[in-house]
Image (cartoon, rainbow, N blue to C red; front, top):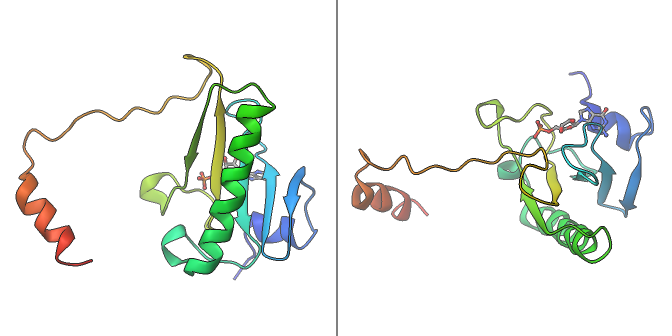
Length: 136
Ligand code: 5GP
């Protein structure tokens, strides 16, 4: 199977702007800066998605994402931060290697649009709640 782009960066085959690195995690500036400072936090070992990542590694990735988010507020003068991970193509994942986006927000209209509308009109919320709850 061909290596994904993040495995190539981790193996030093493609350059990247590395803002953080330890034995398990690397954080790089996203090549497409949705807003100034947009960073990706990535486990060095390959897992396809957040959902497939062991807890211990997932926690290490989230610890780094939290620190970077704090730096964006404290040092980059961001007014907010979106922290998100896309799982599978249907959710917008384009690189099949777990990564967390840390996207600093500066003001409304800063270029990043995250729209979460209420689509619940035809949804049976008690039944939906039950079908999730009973499978956890
Ligand atoms: P996804 O769409 O999978 O949630 O996010 C993948 C991200 O990886 C995108 O935001 C995209 O800009 C970024 N990306 C893709 N190729 C490269 C690359 O070669 N270098 C860096 N730094 N980021 C990349």
